[in-house]
Each structure stands twice: as C-alpha cells, then as structure tokens.
Length: 107
Image (cartoon, rainbow, N blue to C red; front, side, top):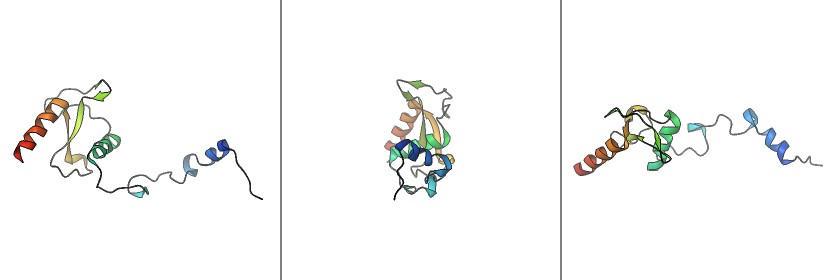
C-alpha cells in the first residue's frame, strides 16, 4: 500500500535542505555548462555573481535603471569571457559602445 501526499505536503517536504538541489550551484549543479556560455548568459552570470555594476570605470557616471534596463554594463576586457571579475570592466552604455566600435575596427 503506497502513501499518497497532497501537492502541498510534497512541496513542503522538498523545501530548504530537504530539496535534492539544495546547495548545488556552480560546478556542482547538474546543468553546469562550464565556461562555454552564450554571450548574453555570460553577462547575466556576472550580474548574478557580482550584482549590477554601480559606476562606469571610464567616465565615472553612476548607474541607474532606465526603461527597465541598467545604464552600466559589464564589458569584457579581452574577448576571452573568463568567469573572473578581473576580466571585466564596468562601463556606461556610451563608453561600452565606443569600446566595442574601437575593438571591431581593430579586427
């Protein structure tokens, strides 16, 4: 004879430390992709790991949210997209665009 649980009881059993995914983030997660993330996910990972950048490192403007988007971005320094904070700059949209244009003209 099997015991049946209501949805509420089952969900209560899997909360917190009882959840099989509890504490399994980063490299211990079964869905870990390593360092081969898509461009947008790499930037999202930086925001989740380090929070939204507060100030542009180039011109010093403070960040704010305009029309649902942040005005300060994470910009990769060398195109390798490492998961290290030292490999990224925080730039306002204007400085980020200028940097990307300058980098694309070099290639």
